[in-house]
Image 1 (cartoon, rainbow, N blue to C red):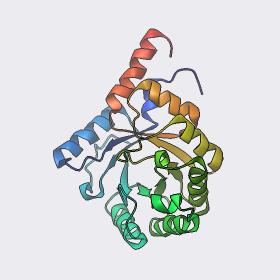
Image 2: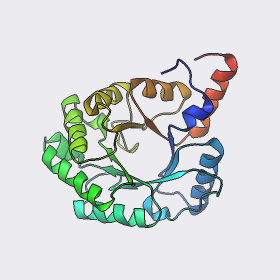
Image 3: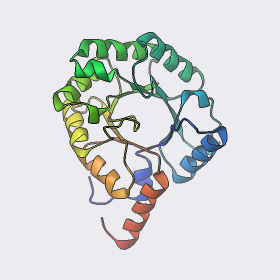
Length: 230
């Protein structure tokens, strides 16, 4: 990866995210407009906000969370929620695993959970698997990532951004990237608030970023570009 990254390049890593429970339809419309203006890869919202009205000239993808944020939903509910979201215009599903199952080492159950959602949203829909890495040990992170590979997901993702243990870390991203070995993408999400944060995650192996404050992150890239270095 280059020592610096341009605003346009950085924006294409970003799922511009609005998942606050109090978000209104006006908030979502503003988020979509910001995503289109910044040139982010997608906009990520709650499933109740679908369908979205996207600017005609934009290439925005629509990502929607599933089983969010606890992951404690029944597998059948997650599958139905994902299927409904795709029918209403979602291009990508970010599902949460049962974090407790990972802590108990029940990775077969996690694989079955992911596989059910995968069956409900066949490609070209993209399936990302949120493992809440800050709540897991390294061994549990590896087991959850292997389950996602076995269940034919497209990405593993660090965090919901809502768990008290925290969000993404460069260590977790690197471990996840090493585990999936390029078979899946790696999405770093949670606590990415600056250009430096974003670049650190990309350097660790992230291929997508979940960011709510995308303006500040991309503006940091603008400022770095203007001063000639990272």
